[in-house]
Image (cartoon, rainbow, N blue to C red; front, side, top):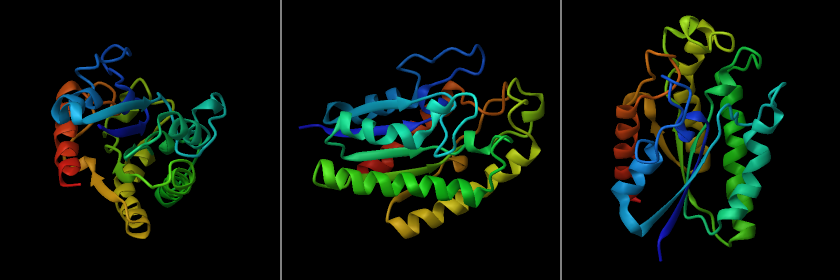
Length: 211
């Protein structure tokens, strides 16, 4: 019986292409690359949504709150053996004015929810791999997304990994600092080019094999 891996994230899990605003092919997205690397013993579930936050309510698109959809998502795909959680980039938007610690606190709520909800609904907790998102690029002010992010977003994105590391210590998850392996495109300073998707998939493959 294959193991189910739920990939819960934002546009970089969805596979947003920074060159044209469309979606990469399944074979290009890191989730698809990971499926190819792991083979039939694993079933990769893609749950990426453009603009998804951890817990903040977007004033224009409130349905992108990651907390609201988490329980229905977990219940739809149960039993879930591993959850790969990569959120936080959109929480860096200036509209939320959130510190790195506040963003990590929101992610910790998601981690707690995954643990308690799956324990109740499927009888066991999945392994949680918490990824700090890629750092926002220095060119964000010239990006098509400059209206939502600024220089402070860049600085706070660099602070996220240490705050996420503290969440992992408290909650017993597995941590991956993605900025050690991947970087955003020069096109928009936010989204990944195809080669970065491949790199991320290879890193996650090694983590999952060790599990």
